[in-house]
Length: 330
Length: 241
Image (cartoon, rainbow over all chains, first blue to last red; front, top):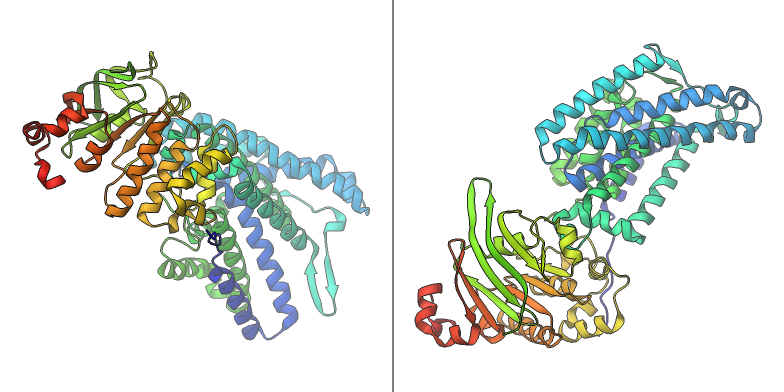
């Protein structure tokens, strides 16, 4: 018997991104400006993806609404700022390798501290309110407020500078196009994390369990797997990614303030809703869309930039009410 | 009759304010297929879910191979060698047929010989091996759900209404598969509304009504006793032949 071909990827969302990019090129009419905006949009989108991918899995796997996710972003940014300060000489050097020896520990520390904080947060705050959405909203919002105040106690209320290492500043100039170096780095790191997540989810047993758990956690348990252990691991990994995203976002903005995470939460929720709750692929597509639209609209019509992503969400949900890549649930 | 692999004694289950199981006493003989019959709402599905720990028994003992598992968590119960085919089939629609079976095989990659044995009675699964399970037909989904439960040898398989809503040709296919499964000596507890399927497969039978077992005996005896069928199940045999 001839086997039937496997799963096919829905190419409509990537085609939509391409159409938006080409549409923007037609409106902007200046290729160099368009390239700059597109790279900025991709970088912003991939940083939002880093910050939101954990949250979409946490919701998909255990129906947990974590409004404190922004706390891990903020903690990541602050830890990175403090670590960079420790390696100030290396960060200020003109040598790329010396800069690398400053930025790698900063990003690693941000990731690890946010991940460990996520473990404690799940144990203390989330676990007592499994299955109770209203309590989850209240207690995680409370946790976010308390966490932010603890940041103020530890780091102070003032804006903290988070300078990029010397060789990561400035732009590459290709003819009359300027492409900021750090944006390219954000794109590379974002794509690498996305690729690693896709390999993990599609090529490993743990990834299979996560995907199955997002669809039907009861059945996964009935097959002999402890979904709660898996959830704790996903929660910690999601927090760690938020920390990494926060560190990069802080460097992107070159400063850190206590609401850096909270201010991203609206965009993050838009991204995971547009993508389809629980879908990592959808989260990636949603984040890229949000990043591109924010940058194009911000340039073309700054007055409506603030609402452009809400409008994008409305349009996407009218078109696909379950999101770009919906997850089947039973 | 063989000794009981699974036994329930005075099992009660509450779901919210509802008292569903009201003292269930049931013995499932080792190596046999026991049919759990009864009208809609009698508590059959609740009994299966309580055995697996998906709903917690509020009182009573559930013994599996002599161990009381009433307080065990679902994953621990499954690891004892109990598989479950829910009424909803519970397939992972976004995962391929292959991935569904890969996940069900806890000991490692599925055994090739075992897979060939399954493909023998469920050929579509081989054909659609790389297809997302959500794209299978209803009958094929049921085949996958059953295959997941038996992709590795299990001591006990709990099956909830496998023929529900399926075409007669598919039902016959499933019956053949269960006959093959019975030959392996696997103990099966099956909830079934289709009396034709029940009497052609069942060794033992138990009938539930209002959260209790009201009949327990051999399936062949119940199949020959139309008065009992009418009294317990509200059906006439002729209508289901």
